[in-house]
Length: 468
Image 1 (cartoon, rainbow, N blue to C red):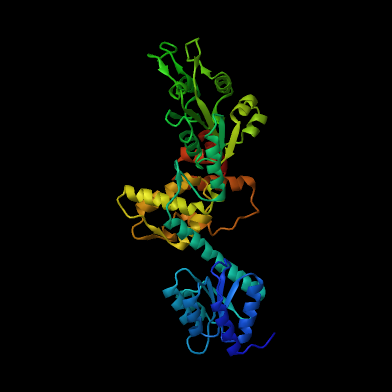
Image 2: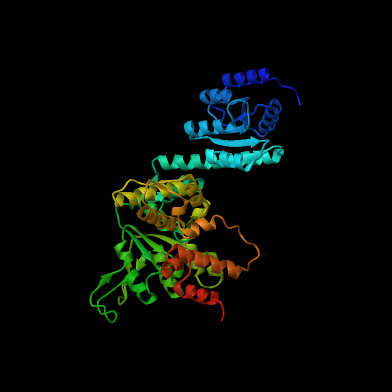
């Protein structure tokens, strides 16, 4: 290890200050230690890992560098002649909000560790430490800083909204590009994805960016309409066609003439209804119940499913010919757990929306709360996040929402490691119960999130009960 005098170290620091390149996007780390040997060791290891390094042998030098140079992380010794590392930590916390601090010390004590953490140090590393321990601590600290910067950047900027769709993650940018292309055609589109991911919003965006935007957009939840009524609702009926048909009534297809019909959860239709839908797709005409004369309709069909239609086709539960007819252009929406950064944008959007409804100022969120929201698995996707934020805005008084304000399930799930010694049934049961808790035991809502009907949910809950 080469010998370095205090004078040489100081000169090296001055040279670095003069040559700061703001276009250099590497993380900038300031290391502060009164030991030249320790400084050299820290510089060498951190430089080798790709970081931009600045060095100081005391707090006064460190403050000078901070005044002249943007820094991401300060690594400081705890005990130094003159002002201590605690003084530097306090100075950073009072003057630089967008910066992290790590403390290293050769004189560990419980009192020192507590004081360092209370003052605002993110990590506390005890000498001697290995290269791996140093780099792991630096990576953890910088990762937290980057997440916080991302969150606050999103929370401050204007939220981009495309017909209700919110997101700037790569996958959502691709969804936006898909919508723009799909809107230029009249081809049938199949939108797949878990419940709560925004399938209807995508369908609306396609319609309102298309040449049919001025015509009706008619959404139909195929799973919510009883089978015996679905045909009448879709195709209409004439007076006297069946008991109770006291007047002729147009169906959803006629209502959507010239525009777009959105068949939500098309996988819930029966095989007999699928035959009738196939005919509409092939011939572009519908036959009202009680009538023998088909009527032409100019309708673009968009469909959605939260199930894998290919699997249903193989099981004989969905017609293969209809599948190919609706699967002309296909897109799959990602679950919210795969759009972690978009959680910040969505949280800001919903907080502002519900606060305005209540005539309040939108609350802020602590860094810790944002971390929990970002890492939560969101079984109900965007719809669940919306419900959670609404509850927080209504129930939380004060300026900022913190971790204790979040639902207990959300707080505890962030701390629980995944157990890999449980059966699939046990995991499924726990997941179902978590979903029920997240929707206040609303079984209809839980069944939608889980992609099953209420009967199946009841059966699974019954099986989950412990035998007496």
